[in-house]
Length: 204
Ligand SMILES: [Mg+2]
Image 1 (cartoon, rainbow, N blue to C red):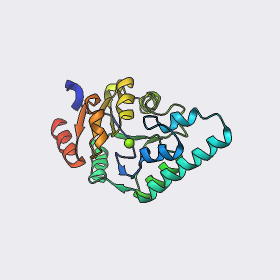
Image 2: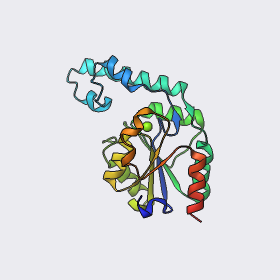
Image 3: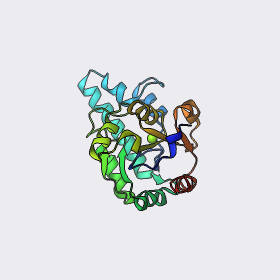
Image 4: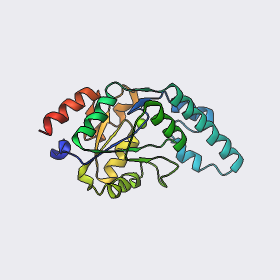
């Protein structure tokens, strides 16, 4: 573990699906329905589709799939308390997701969550794993990369943090796939209550 893993940050950046909310998105099943290979990533595979009609229809399918997930979504235990802890500590909060603007707004409104900066695939030119989102966070809050923590649940999040030079905390939400990328995280946690306790102790 890097010694600076628990250094007090200025900004905490969160992924949304699988990190703040369980949104029951079975991307493996979706990719099958969309005719994409199992090891592809949906946004990138969609970029490769050349027929505009087909692309539009696949994008609609993705949007509907994500909105359905958002309707069913539930907050993970301890998320509200952890966001409150960030506020008490004076940390700025940002959201960085590959989801759409519409679905992101729906989820934030549903749970009454607020972030100082919200980046999604519609307002960010290069989605994760490109480091662009974290570069923008750094500029927006005038915070150095060492003053940012990125919390996510997926390989995309870890690659984004690693290429931007930002610490990553991996939320182990119980997904079987996590073992495939756990090594790339700076820190792994199982629940927000213990994360809060660990940080509270180390920030003293
Ligand atoms: Mg996620």
